[in-house]
Image (cartoon, rainbow, N blue to C red; front, side, top):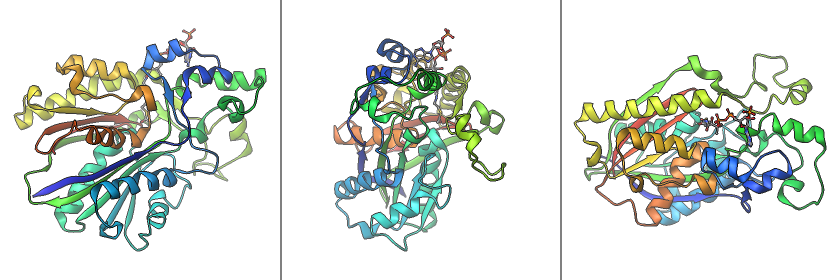
Length: 350
Ligand code: ACO
């Protein structure tokens, strides 16, 4: 007894911003971005559009694909690091948008590793009998932490140059700013008697590295928790030690995957698909190399969406469900590492 994924959906906002478009607001190039990360374009929310708006669109598609009535959903798990409000969480907003007032909505914040923690949670909710049909959504609206203000110049709506000061402010964060994109992925999990669901997993958190990627401003250590000086210091832009994160990902994920395979007696070539977080094409290439996974077994979409944090793995699952790659009965591995730092691997029988 476990769960199966009965419906999937994803949604990304607006028209894509290509790498070369970013040159309107900062000094960068398509070559630098594509070579270092594999990213070619990303999407951004419009002003006023929030994570729960993207999530609602993705959820409607998942509900339609599942062929259920939304009212059959008896639990919502919402993962985002870019919520509309510090509180309440975006899960409540999503429930309201889907007409599910009264259905419990739980917000989790494991950033890029959210799907891994989410799947354990969903498994527990279903096995305990607390829920039968769970909507899990990962959605991000990263646009609000981008280090530029001239969105109309970025999108090409207004001709002109940003000021040298604005360009300099954006350049200070360019290694981070080119990586992230907005989007949402939704999965509907349902209790099943079939031999499907979570087989085994390994999860880890190490808060000693919390400041490898974090947002320095807008927290409750300061009074008030938001000050004008934080805008001046661009404290709303995450600070990232890119090289350290890269090393964490290429060492910890293969190690955790090997441990999980060893403990469960699963050979790497007995796994059908490796559904990995998309932070950097090179990170995933290293992981494949170290585990001996053929390229075609690890689908990628970072070129089109960038890193959509909690949205990434659900979006990847939706794409690979709709294109017929993921089939019932297959054994798949999910892998991710994100801010916290949180990381883990899961073996899931589809
Ligand atoms: N365009 C052009 N040049 C740039 C850019 C840019 N966008 N960004 C940085 N550079 C320059 C730097 O200024 C530097 O120049 P210098 O040598 O003259 O000083 C040079 O390029 C190298 O910069 P690094 O930051 O050292 O580049 P690196 O090779 O480390 O690549 C990258 C950076 C792509 C960010 C990489 O470190 C990475 O992908 N790390 C992992 C990040 C990650 O996984 N983040 C997501 C997880 S977080 C989550 O859970 C939310």
